[in-house]
Length: 343
Image (cartoon, rainbow, N blue to C red; front, side, top):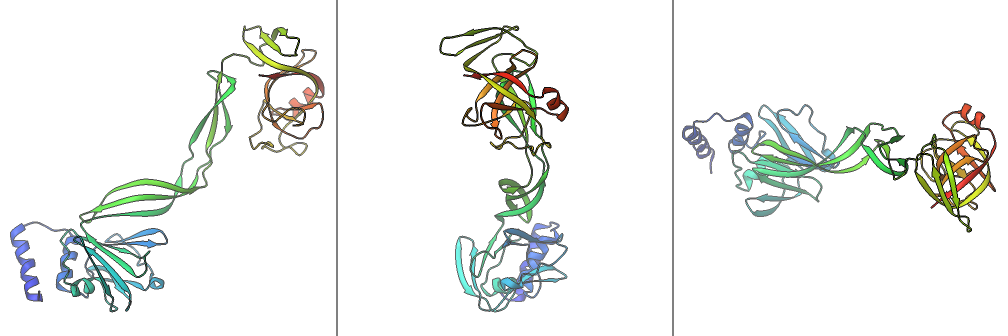
């Protein structure tokens, strides 16, 4: 098709349709008239795992010289120039062609192959493959990797040691940044959808909230009303509220107190959890980590209550009880306590 025929075809299209075409469509038709000007909306993929869309909103021309591809501008928009000797695979209308580039623009290459994109066609330039792969279509789908800010999420965790209806903040949330993959669909020169697919990494810290699922309503204020103990050392604690706890053994142990920021203690336990009221440091050879307990001073003066062995740092027949403040630790001091090992 010579230049005169192409111009006539363009004129007939305008006369027959009588429609106002957008700047993008006009640019695409210019490719049929002149191969030395920008000819299409280009979507470049495989560039550092991100996508570059060359349209009227593009502010800076990317430097892709390391990939033997060059982006140029003209009064008509953008075009992409291929270095000589590159293998170019062209996907167009269910056919696949493979040619060698001649240091020419993509517009010129398509003209050389007698490929005339439709008015709504776009050109996807895949730089992730050896050489260059071109796809000319009115609908293109690609995956875009971006770095973006992200808000923290709240993770709710059941805690059988907390009474039903109660919650406890274990870890505060922190906003951060993430690398995310999006599936992007363009149709007729416009982006019609962009859907999140996958999160590759994130610096955000989730908020963790524990909620109680305990069947009993045992609290620190709930005093033991009676103890039903069996000959094997097991038994049941009966509280004034009527709640009960079954235990497998009762140990008389020396108890001390600790808090984060004093005596070398930090905010993370030996098991990787965060310190909080109810965390107890033990000698794991005496009480295995993860053991649930109910602890009360032997004289009844202090009720520590429900506890879990999550930390270490003591030796022998001792337990170290976590308190939120240093003054509470001073008030507790050192006491003999009865540690009920719960079933």
